[in-house]
Every structure is written in structure tokens, then in C-alpha cells.
Length: 162
Ligand SMILES: CC(C)(COP(=O)(O)OP(=O)(O)OC[C@H]1O[C@@H](n2cnc3c(N)ncnc32)[C@H](O)[C@@H]1OP(=O)(O)O)[C@@H](O)C(=O)NCCC(=O)NCCS
Image: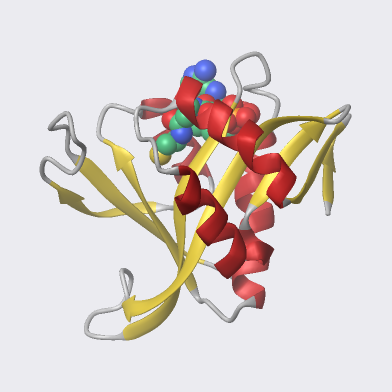
């Protein structure tokens, strides 16, 4: 699908899910049930991607395709990609994998006829926000006490090319 140096960006397979869960558990405070990952993979296999190095999964992005109010146009409905979760293992960050996972998923999401992409991010997660801003995301709103520990989220959205 794509390469970043020695790393490959490819579709996630069911056998990758335990490694994806492990990365999520060690890098993010938001955890999900095992079945949540398998359900997203079953429903949206084209847009669930992993970064791999020598057979080891070191990063992932999982997405949904939704239909709802546009985050970018007033009063319009849109087919939207929702970046549900993205993480790269410590030790593999800063090498462009987060960027490549996002850009590759934008391409796959656009192929599913979505015109925009959005995500929620902790208001304190500056390195993630810097990545999203670099990719054209703008803050479109905030959600008070979105996370279980009470932290607020920014909603960020960008148009994606068809
Ligand atoms: C956010 C995350 C996925 C980025 O992955 P990555 O592979 O490091 O991303 P990249 O190497 O493509 O870097 C993309 C941009 O992020 C920013 N960035 C990456 N690492 C950073 C760091 N340690 N400090 C500050 N900014 C950083 C930079 O702006 C960088 O762009 P640049 O290289 O052009 O300057 C990764 O840091 C991560 O897994 N974080 C923990 C999980 C998380 O917070 N997920 C997001 C939840 S919304």
C-alpha cells in the first residue's frame, strides 16, 4: 500500500488485532473491548491500517465511515471518515509513520466516497494536534469532559480529496 523507509503500511488483518490491542494498551488511555476492534475490522476493512517492520506491527489507525452533519459546511450532510484511534509504538515515532497512516487512510476513506474526515483529540495532546494541523485539520468544536478522566476533546476536521 505504502512504504516509509523499511516500514510497510498495509491493511490490518484479523491476526494483527492482538498486536494492535497491545499498542493501544501501552500508548493511549482510551481502551476498547476486543470485539470492538474485530467489529471495526469487519465493517471497515479498507480503512483499518497497520504499520509493520520485519513482521512486527508497530502502529495502527482504525476508522469508520459515517453519514451525518458536516463538520465543515453549515447545515449540510456529509459522508465522513472518522479517525477512531491512531497510535505508533514508542521508539518508532517521529519517522513519518503517523503521517503515512493518516494520509493512506485519507486515500482509502475518499475511495469510500467520503468528502471529509474528523477526529477527537485530548486538548492536552499537542504532538497529535500538530500532526493533524500539518495535514490540514482545523478545530471545529470542543466536547467538555469527553474522556472518562474528565478531560475535554477538540473535534478537528479536514476536507479530503476525492
Ligand atoms: C500522534 C502519533 C500517532 C504520531 O505518530 P508519529 O509516527 O510520531 O508521527 P510522524 O512521525 O508522522 O510525525 C508527525 C508530526 O507529529 C508531530 N510530532 C511527532 N512526534 C512528536 C513529538 N515527539 N513531539 C512533538 N511533535 C511531534 C510533528 O509535528 C510531526 O511532523 P514533522 O515530522 O513534519 O515535524 C504518535 O505520537 C502516538 O502514537 N502518540 C500516542 C498516541 C496518540 O496520542 N494518538 C493520538 C490520539 S488522538
